[in-house]
Amino acid sequence: MSLDLYTRFVAALVAVLALVLLCAWLARRFGLAGRGFGVRGQRRLSIVEMTPIDGKRRLVLVRRDDTEHLVLVGSDSAIVIESGIAAPSSGANFAAMVEETRS
Image (cartoon, rainbow, N blue to C red):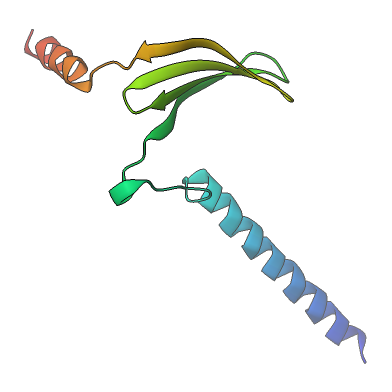
């Protein structure tokens, strides 16, 4: 077997691995990886916001139905900081935006 055959094999292997990694990155970037669906495709659980505290901990605001929970997530633990926060109504925010544009 010639050196040219080995070179083409390695180049093809690198190209396939790069395509697999690119597809995995795109799936994660656009939220396609690990997406769970509830009844009739409606999601009941979502992450509203995440804020890093330091290298090992971050604050996560999680929404379940119409209730939000603030959770401190570490490398080996999760602590609920505040529970039962009422989710802001989207109608009130939209009305405020309309009023701002009128004035």
